[in-house]
Every structure is written in C-alpha cells, then in structure tokens.
Image 1 (cartoon, rainbow, N blue to C red):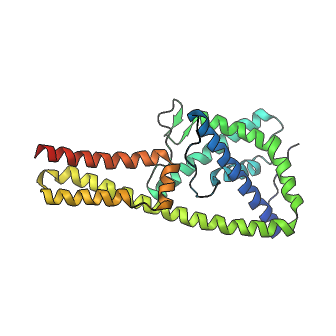
Image 2 (cartoon, rainbow, N blue to C red):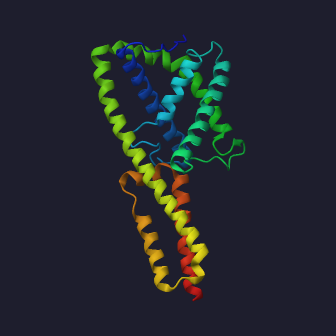
Image 3 (tube, one colour):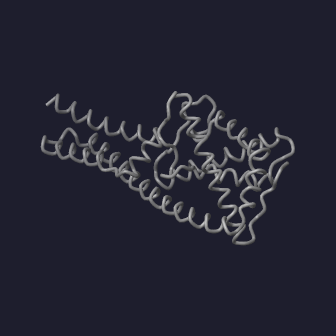
Length: 256
C-alpha cells in the first residue's frame, strides 16, 4: 500500500520527517558500502561526505521522490522511471554544486560507457530507480508507521539529539572540505609555478619547493584524511599532482 508523505505542519511532524531523512540517509550509506565492497571482495573505505554513518544525498533523494510522486505510482514501472529521473537529476545537481562550492570533483563516471559529463551514469541511475520502487512500495509505508508509532515523547527528543550531532558533523565536514580545496589549489598553483619557472630555479629554490610539497602532503588532519579515504577519485587526483611535482623535481636534479 502506497503511503504519501504529508507536509509537516507541527513541530512533532517536522521531527518525524527529520528522523525519516536520517533513516534513509543511513540506509543509503549501508547500500553505498555494499555496492562498493562486494565487487572488491572486502570492506571498502568508509563512504560519504560526513564523518557519521550516513549519506545525506540518499535522504534528500528519498524525500524528493516521496513528495514529488506523492508516495509513488501504483505501477512499479512508472515509479522506477520517475524515480530514476528524479534521483539522477539530484545526483547531477549535487555533483555540480559541490564542485562549484569546493572546486573539486567528488565523483566521476567519465570512464563509464553511458554517462553525462561524468556526473551521472546509467548503471547508478538504474540502481536508483530500483531503490525507488523498494522505497515507495515496500520500505516507506512500514517505516513511516513505525516512526509515527513512537509518539512525540520519543520522536522530539530523539530528533533534537540527532540534529545536534548531524549539524556538528556537517560543520566539521564542510570545514575539512574547504581546507582540502585550499590545499588542492595550492598544489595546482605550485605545479604551474614549477612548470613555468623550473629552468631558472637554483637548488636552494628547488629545496623550498620540495618543502612546500611535503607540508601540503602531510597537512591534512584526521577529518580531511577521512574525506580523502571516502572519495578515492579525489585522493587519486591529489596524489597524482604531488607525484607529478616530485617527479619533475627529481628529473631536474638528474639533469643538473
């Protein structure tokens, strides 16, 4: 039985919707971990932008689908198609927005056969569509009733407590992302400087460049390192820049 999600009009209802958002964000994180770990045959690095065990994009995607489709269509095929389009649009917009905000590409499907600007790919879109069918026709009716059944005496304090943790995690993660973005910009600037001025640099100047590379390589704190491990594409891009700079410095030394 399909269950439309009502627009909250009271604080208690807002708390229930927020708990629903957290639940779907957590389920999305679990699905992401399975999706990445099964092909590798072992547990992969912790996924997601936040430090906690949740991926907000899945929570936002679930609420978007539930509100836009009024709980889903009676036909699972229509739910699949509409859900696939909605969630793919959300993934594309999120990728674009995060790149504009932090000047970094957090995921890239450019090597996939069917993709759009590396931001969305057919395989993920199909998986999202199937998840939307499970969401609307199986999971949401049961989960929403369970959350409502807890009552305001549980949902309000629980939502307030989780909100505090969620906001703290968001602030820490955004701070780390900004710091990583600044480090990447410095590395790129250093790489450009190296290419332009290497011919006229003396050994003393090159040693200063090596020291800058070491500082940028060792500077990430525990939260920034967690973000790098959670996004292999971003970590790989950063390592490639550092390796290219070090190789250029080494080659120059061997020619001197």
